[in-house]
Amino acid sequence: MNSRKFYFNLTIVVSIVLFISGIGILFYVNNYYKSSSAVTASDKSVSNILQPLVQSKEPFNVLLMGGDKVNKNSDTMMLLNFDPATCKINIMSIPRDTKVKIEGQFRKINFAFPHGGTELAVQTVSELLDVNIKYYIFVDTTAFRDIVDLLGGVNIYVPANLNYDDPTQNLHIHLKKGQQTLNGSEAEQYVRFRKPNKWTKDVKEYYDGSDLKRTEAQQNFIKEIMRQKLNIQYLPKLTSVINTVFANVETNLTLNEVVKMTGYIGKFKTENLNFIEMPGTPYDGSPWYYLCDIPASRKIMAESFICTDSFVEIDRNLTKAYADSRTLADNPGKTTPSKSTTKNPSNSDTSITGSDKNP
Image 1 (tube, rainbow, N blue to C red):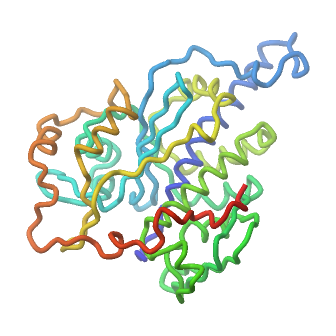
Image 2: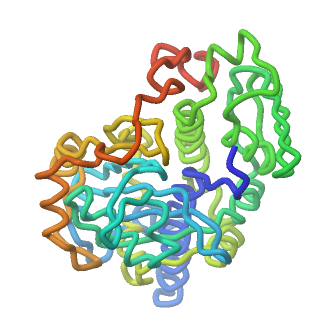
Image 3: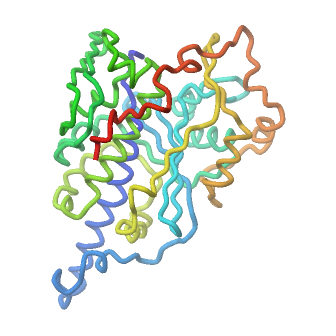
């Protein structure tokens, strides 16, 4: 595993949900009761209290980034689309090793943020996928454990005994198989696990040493934390959660925009959350890259990531060059398909949830 701090896909999603819903709920409820002495909690239901303000009906895209705020690293990127008309959320994970062109040189996409900040990161994703991105959110992963603990843990089915130790990172994963409630530290272990100290039959059934199954576990965790925690009973805890999130979030979303989004909270269902894998091919070479299938990815953008506004100005020449040349696979030196991902022993027939015991 990389010696740098691991950046969680799930931290970003959890944070954006809490960021939007928590701040919006508290802000709107507080002001609602300040301005109306005639209305009490018994007079109207929560759904009526949280009726939307003036809302935009246009779908929009958000680039979600996770990393170390102090060192300005970002090894996790996800593109999120929210459609107010259907209350559906599409999320595409962008592999950190995706090959792109930055300032005339081939680079890995995780180079964009530390080199040029949020604007370059948004621009790089936009030009590769030919998609508009209206908002960005950068989340520091130090909030992850605290958020899970504040929410009282998350109930998850661990599919096998997971044991891994890496003293260089001070990383120690020791989880028992079975249904259980994971606290912040244990949840971190669950989403970080990729390979064991010693392979066993049970572990091989669900993991193969690559990031593919680890990503599946992260997505499973995201779905569960949203299913279990997005309800009104956690309203009293939102102040603490918000404080944790705000200390570790940078965004161009305004408070007014956040408040406008709260009207959709009661309409959201976990089945409306759709994870999409970026089409592409992992390649071994020098350096190692993930090669985006540009035509297939852009088809997904056109169908599921509709957005009319852009946070940055896009270089249309580079956008066109990506589509015309299809030369992302052209790289000096030998490139061959990655053995660890083209032959995956834990294939799509095996769910990372382990069994139907996971509710």
